[in-house]
Image (cartoon, rainbow, N blue to C red; front, top):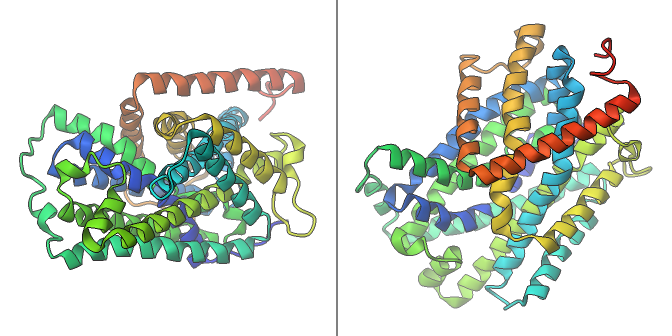
Length: 444
């Protein structure tokens, strides 16, 4: 039996260190290049808007079903009313076993890539570094949850210091507000601008992902009806302000048309302000942030196969808790092992869009539709947290996610559909053997 040991501070820290990984430091120049103008800040606002709206859905579900596993439980509860709950929850776990290690690997690969600014790395050495980061994370997570909560707060302090140094550097430079004054220079709101927002938002929303990580730890959160929603909204608001301020600060020193072509824009930014030694220190802090992100993501995802196994919907071995430290160690070791392999096989640029394309249909859009089904079947009284103006935020979230899905590119959409199709086939084989839905009509 897991114990509720994580309070609002720890839950918020876990969310925020998952959000601020290597993502914003790598995607900052990408977003500027895609927008190709001083109005690139609108893409970061668009990412924050989608995160806020989607967090309303997560908050209703997380407060109502505060269990380990997050989306697994949400989809099972929601689609159980249509007798397809087992299929939807199985598909979520199926895709998690593929995309969660990709998320973990993407952060470790990003860590190795940024390390090459300090130490030139061969291809083999870079892979050794990324794989080593995953192994170290597994070692750190192999302990009791309250200890992990303290580690999360410590890691978050490093994340906060890094962002504040970047922002403070721009203030000290004296031209902090110049990018804001010129944000609309050359702006024409037309189809091209909307399309650019869509494509660049794929990168910004990747940098916001993680605001819901607390839901995967729902069984370990104190007073979940209050702390789960609060931790998400605090996380998103805080990170949105920090991301916008960071972008403004960097482009107040390095013009946007130069920043868009810089592979290590943060290091270059600090180098121009304070010299080579400061740039080295900043690069080390960016590596700290990337490491913290791998830590938080691995922690959250390791609870999903565990929750499914406890429920009898996945291999029983994943339901095992450590006999003395009481955490799902089999799930942690498996996902960490797969992430280690992925970190050796893939490039960072190959996984960002794939991660989103794979998750949007089943997880994000699936949860929005599922919440509306639950509201109809159980009534609003069953939800301790209730979003304002329901169901309008749900419709808006679904529309925005559909736009992001299309913006990942048709090849990525096809790969996401292929994963869903393969998962459906595996589920049908499993259901046939066990005489489960849809092969037994009375099965709920």
